[in-house]
Image (cartoon, rainbow, N blue to C red; front, side):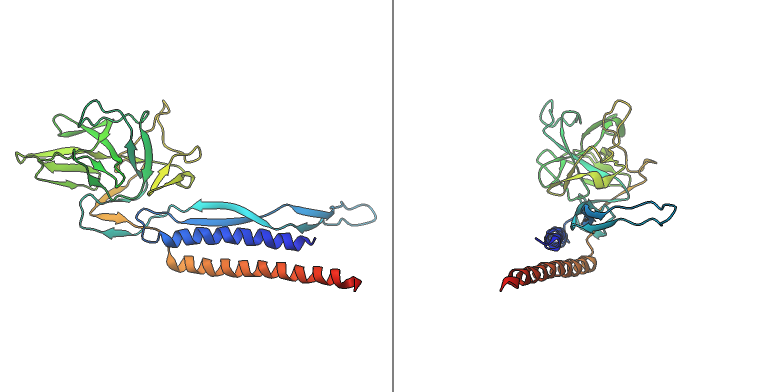
Length: 298
């Protein structure tokens, strides 16, 4: 059989995957915190019909002759560029301006109802850029799936931040009002009219955010290639937004939207469609050649 036919099949398979990724990007064009995907290709091994020869005293060198055997999927990258910020009317909608990701946790042991301490070593941890949070019955800040937003605990009767301990962020039910500052501090006015601190939003830092693994529901999971920041004891080290290593800001009453560019996606869709059509043409042309070979006996 002709090698060109199998090369065309490999090209069709690759462009089908590219169209799948483009379709997912377009479907999530309005998904908060979504990061678009990108497909790259690479050529498959080539069949060598003649090897290279070095020059001799009487004759010059020759180059190798190789026939390519098609293309294959190279990478499917997640592009973690900043999405545009959309203002909202909810004070529990947070967007991150800069690096870092929100940390959400579940299935950790609580000493009692309302207890807030979190041990990252025993909890199920996920990361997200989607900041559409809400409150549960206890006043804890949670995601739409009920995962707790992880922050730094308070001390001295809810007046200061303790950056050595992590906890859920709980706004008391009798609080008169609350607000969130750009450095992630969640402040509230208690029943007596006194200003208090509910906690500070903690962010995770990654050296390679593209190495994170998508888990659905706007969540990402750590992977061996993500480069999650850890301390000397190999424990997860979270940072406050204003730390020098992040220099980020928490913007309340806003959400970071998808970084999908529709114009770019439709352009890529056209190129993928034409690439698919060109590869189908290779197959039909190869089929016509095979038909001519079969008809030689007639």
